[in-house]
Each structure stands twice: as C-alpha cells, then as structure tokens.
Length: 180
Image (cartoon, rainbow, N blue to C red; front, side, top):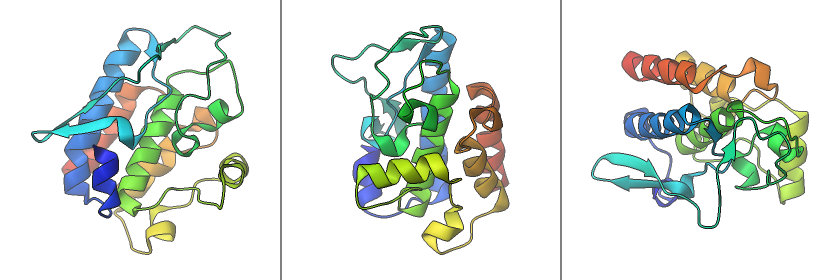
C-alpha cells in the first residue's frame, strides 16, 4: 500500500509520477460514472507490479455527483478531506476528490501532511482557516515550480480555485511528470 511506502520516507517525483497517474485515472473513471469517491487516502492505494489501484472500502457506496442530500461526508481521513467535506456541505462535487489527490501527492512528496497538529480538531481548524503550506515549507527543501503549483492548485481551500475537473488535473500532472 502507498501508506506503507510513505512510512519509509518521502517519495521522489519519479516514484510518485506513475502512482498518482494511476490514481487519477481511476478517479476519472469514477467521475465518468457520475460518482464521487470522497474517501481517497494512501491506505486505499495498493501498489502491485509497478501499478497502483484503489481498493474499495467495505460497506461504503460511492456518492452520486448529484446527490445533494447525502450526509455521509465524514468518510475518509480528515487529512485528505476537502474543506467542504469537513464542513459537512451537502453540495460536494468532484473537486473534493481533486483535493484528496493533492493531499496524497503533498504527503508523499513532503513526507508530512500539509496540516499537522496535536489532534484532529487542530488539523481541521488549520485546514479551514489557512491556505495549504508549500512543499518547501514543510519538507525543508525546494521542489520544481510546476510541482508546487500542481499541489497548491489541488489543495486550494476554495474549490473554485482548484482544477475544475479530474481531466484538467490529469493534464496538469502529465505536464509535471514530463518536465522532470
């Protein structure tokens, strides 16, 4: 699992490139079916033979993109949840998954989560009140501008400032990987 690999230390961009590409492709297929995952996190990413795939969570249904009265918004770890999910908004769209992918990328590359605190309430407050830090601020080393831009766009608190679709995110990630 990606979570286990991340415990060993930060991933290089070369390592993360194909993993995140596979995750983005799976989420794109989910969105194409009119569903949102809402529970993306490294512990659901299985690494097998140079490929990555998402494993489903037991007893969990994906939410329809137009299911505005769904209350099951606390699925997943707060670390990877978009601010609108943390707030319990019923008006959630695919950009919540885009945020989660950005949080996974950030954590994998930096070796730490974007918002850290002593407890979940502190992490939630930071997520809701502050923009995400840069990779360099958390990891203490420089990253290419395209990588920083990719993560910053994906982790934007205002979902209108994120990638507008998983397809646009996919193209941005391809650009990041090809520039390396």
